Length: 383
Image 1: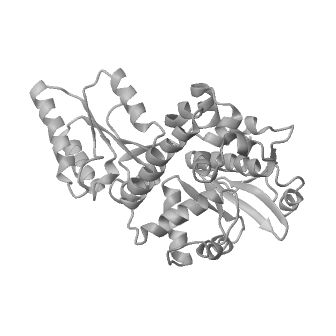
Image 2: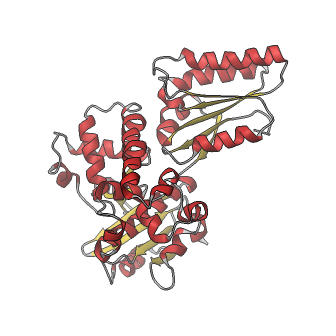
Image 3: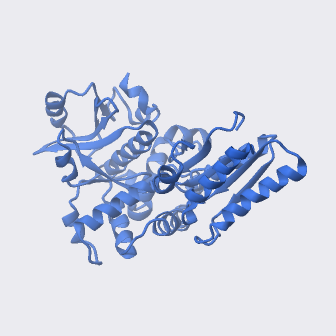
């Protein structure tokens, strides 16, 4: 905001990771006049509301003879065709030399894909905010590694971890319900909302496991098909809730035809929907292994979004690798998690012989502990 007006600044990320808090802290520190508003309670069809905010700022600048103003709009994606309105107002200011700088906040990649690339191409700069890392939760709330693995990276629920009933209530009413109702169902056209909810709950319960859509269909009460489930899973991934990793293969067609490996973006979702309690899960090595692998997978998914990497898994017969990371240069990393449910895995060596990754990491070993891995920025693994 201290630079000359050039781009709309967009803060995009999942619910309850601190986007609004960050902007509020900025407002308290800046000396530039600010109008900060939220579209959370605005009717989706009320596009004129955006115009009204812009005109309010322009009027204040004329009356107070100001040369600069900052307009902040939170939950912008809730208004239909918002990007076309923002483009028109932004371009009008550019043509008339009006120095209104703009910050937009929205939920995850739903905001990015459904507006920014359509109307605002070349006019915005994206700041991605992801689920909090172990290092951040440890620094801010003194989380232990095990607490992070189970309670995840939602800062709003951090102080409730000693009272799991309150924590579960927070997860249900502050994260899960708003995430589905506001960040998915009201932003995307979902023909079968009940099916979407069932897929989300089943997918979270199978986090870190490979499961075909055909088998998922067998557990669903609502009718659907494989294509519908695949599209719904993609939408949940866009909202940074639940992902489906594809199997790594050099042939892209084989990737798309593979069964997904479900992976939560935040292990708090797995715990809230499938956990038996922190102490009970920690005392079961096999079940705890799923939480550890999900924590590593969630970290990879969130960091990959920042750095533009792709995350896969690999399996061939009985050989498998938990995670395969691919950068823009098509270079590979193989990542295996020693999580309790599988002791020895020859799949890493088979993968190395077939695909020649530049590095292989065994997370949870004496050489590379889980805590160390979750504390390292992902881009440093390629060095």
